[in-house]
Amino acid sequence: MSADQENIFKLSPQAQMGVFWRILHLITSRYGNYPMGQTLVALTMVFLNERGMPPTLTDLCEATGLPKASVSRYVSWQLREGLCEERVDQADRRKRMLVQTEKGKAEWDWQIRELGKVFADAAEMHAGLFDEKEGMPAAGVLELMKSLTKEAPKQRARSNLVKKK
Image 1 (cartoon, rainbow, N blue to C red):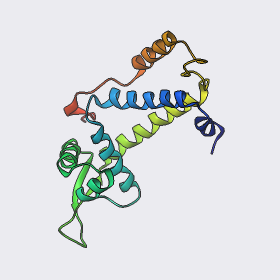
Image 2: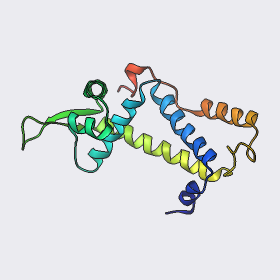
Image 3: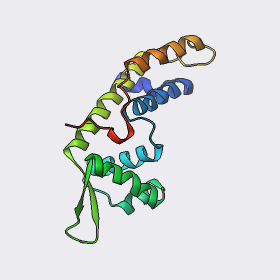
Image 4: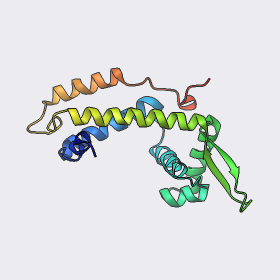
């Protein structure tokens, strides 16, 4: 673990919330105002695919605790956008595995790069930046948030979250 990574764990709870705000801001800036459950389903699918276990719809329901109707709706969107595809499990032809596509992998790579930037920035910031008493005054925090918003990726329409070729 690098010194920068260790510094993340030394941030105050308030500064950690600042990092959390940056992550939520990044997601909203990139993808718009879609449900948080959709983010959870997408991340779960990617984590399992990255480990060589493409999940089924049932796997996603059990892993996230979300209702099947919601998970199905979120997965349908990902299928339409080309971020994943269904493949029949050769061992059990009743199973439909959700496999990440090249387009989905490219989007995941973008997310990893951007998240790395968020953590690198957080490691460089003064740990007390978001502290209520010792950190930057509220007006300064607001100005910082505004500047981060100006630098953020432009929000995309809900039906077109990933660039079309």
